[in-house]
Image 1: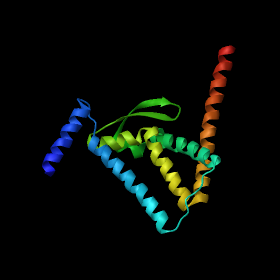
Image 2: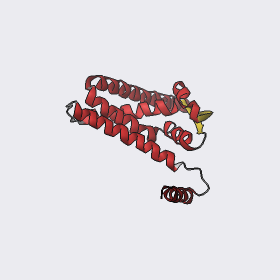
Image 3: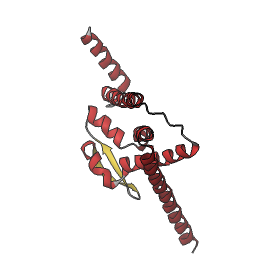
Image 4: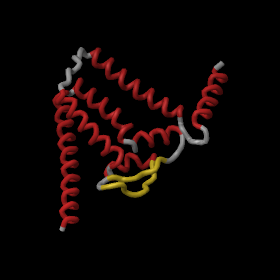
Length: 172
């Protein structure tokens, strides 16, 4: 029975993926880790009697900016490349302080590589961590999200200044 189920799942994965290497089982494993961690946070909150936060629009804005910033730091920043190195290969740069890396390996290695090099994918994990932080350490989490939000705003201002300088240089 189990062998038959395993064969059917493997056949479905091959049919879905075609000639591409799509590690569906590893993706399912990552989803399982995420679901288990989320359920663990919920169970811990319930067991400790923690009240769920009632986020304000300001909290959502801070968390969104912080999630954007931290996701890009994790997925693209040169300083965090040692975290990605086991799963990627350096290819070059894609912009100011951002790296281009190719995912390497197969199976779980490839799935984790895709997760840690994609700020959109990493964002879900970061936002969930911010939410968990708001349950168990709200003041510290608010400080961290405010700091990351300020950094995100500063980065946008840096880009705006650089663009303005290019416009001024082109005009002269």
